[in-house]
Image: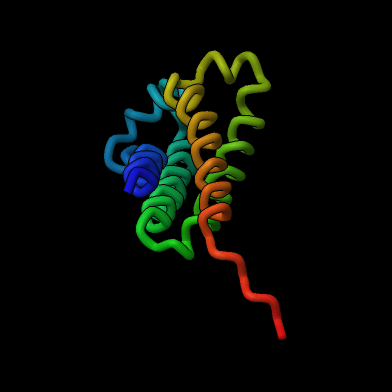
Length: 129
């Protein structure tokens, strides 16, 4: 039950960039962009949709065990790549919001623990005859 709650919270927070579809002004606070051009806005809104899909997959994994590891592993990969692309640059890091700087590393750890616990709690596979 705890894992379901934790994954639901992580998935919901992961999906929040999708709000930029309805409120493009969120791009300023989320990405430090005061007046993005139309293409940048579209790309970041598209990123929001992808984040919503990832968040939905994490929530799905909370309730559908076979989806848990693939959703968690995908989130770990995408969050790690985002951090690797942004945090290493001092200028970009200064423009990042606190949620990305704190939540993404925390989510990576939580999702890693979820994967480890999943394999520890899963019954061993039967050996082929």
